[in-house]
Image (cartoon, rainbow, N blue to C red):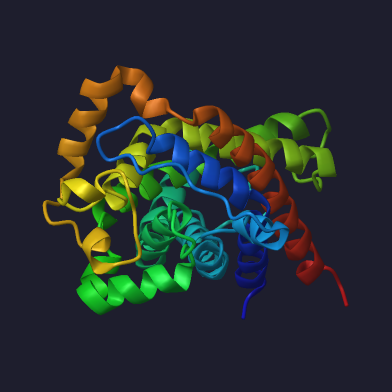
Amino acid sequence: MSADFWASYVSGGLGILIGNRLDVLKVNAQTANGSTAPARIQEPALGVQKFTALFRGAAAPILGYGALNSILFLSFNRSLKVMDPSIFDYTKLAGVDLGKIWVAGALGGLATFVISAPSELVKCRAQLMIDGQGSSYAVFKDVWKHQGIRGLYYGGLITSIRDGFGYGWYFWSYELSKRLLLSRGADPFAPPTTSDVLISGGIAGVVTWMSIYPLDVIKTRLQTQPSGNPEQQGLLRTNSDSLTPKSAKTSLVVAREIWQDSGVRGFYRGIGVCSLRAFVVNAVQWYAYEKIMAFFSSPS
């Protein structure tokens, strides 16, 4: 496998592992105080169970996001190479037009659809389980049993739009931030310092989520909506009834409900914890990616 495959795979899994707990808080904030909102998670009493609860829903994204990140970076790098054949190092893009970088990022984001859509659905539902059965595998098995592959891709359209738009800004903002920091020196192709990478990665994460957060709120509400049974409104369970909504709402209906319930503020519920998570996760993720790429490119 190529260097960018392993660099992106390892950095993606590491980023999810670090940021999972904050992601749980984000998903709960996004689904709070709305007509599709599940109840609060009831944390188990035992210390070990409390610890494992920190990583509820992490299995799917850790396994899936490594592969997703590989598809993302491979698609980005190859698309950019087609648009600008002069590229000699995927971590040194100082001379590449930022518009091309945005387009390549958007193409990379769209390419992740095959993994992003099902892993997001499983992750969000697992994170909101309140009956102690919130494992990613349990959610996956139930969705597959009752709806098959079609059920795993529920909400896939808005997920792909979110990813295409968001990852365009992701690579654009990272490269712009890095260029601004490296402009202090004479050589724009000089290796960035640790602080350069961490700051640029963190900024890229925040910029990306700020640009797509309303879409992510709609996606989360859409994928975690409860069944049509009034007794189960607000509860997400591990049975087929909750994972197969009787009256599934569209993205437009969900967006209208959020607007009527909370206005503009409803589309940014949880943005604070999301921004914190985005900065930390993407700072670490980009640092790991750059370091692994440098390791593979260094003379043996």
